Image (tube, rainbow, N blue to C red; front, side, top):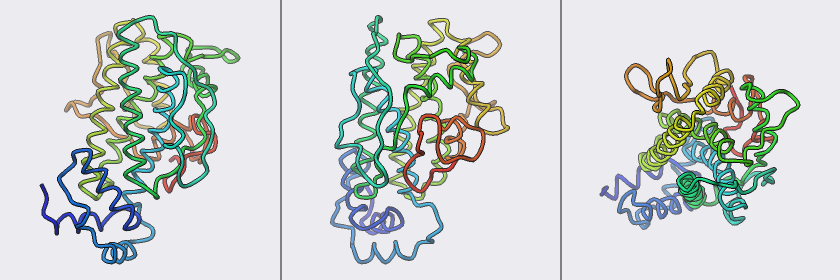
Length: 309
């Protein structure tokens, strides 16, 4: 699909070291990102190129690790909801401090379609974690400490869904689960959209674009089911709460506008908006201020990108 010289130059411009480049190349090939042979990578030339990079620049590996932090959160949330347990331990180790997961249990699904939707999304998120973890290799960060218990209560209070002192159990029933999923899915889409312009390596960008498409399908499914179950008021309140955290612009959209369906949150040109990594962290840290931890990540995320705006 690509010439050997092109691929050699492309891989040399990104990732952390020659081994990481070869590992990503192997994973990308297996995932159908291009028929590229790992033998085209020359370790000496790759190392020289890496050492010449600006030490202050944000590497593609740093961006992919930021995505991996988010995928850990989604993966744990859905795995517990569907299976009653978290991600496999062999996919959660890496650079940085590996943290525990607080909360999480199986949702007592009553509706066959919602159970199947949740199972499919759980499978996709597991695959995302596996792909990124394998592709990044020794550069992959560990799963940070994740809170999928009190954090949902904090969101529900901020959105006015419950009163201070009450608890929002996202795993108690289907409706609560769908509202929890809505918090993540829209953030995931905007995170990949915002990160895309920062990725230099076209192979990495292709992988990120593919995951963005999957996250968009997930978000549309959750938004549609919420609309069909007359949960627009709750979803719109969550949207407003998210919007209050990520800066002065009014970009986040609920699932209805002027009383009609708004399944696709887009601007006047039908283009979805993106969030910078810092703005994404504002939402998942549950703070409008600069911070390095909070909310769903009580000790912060691992990796170079870890501070909210």
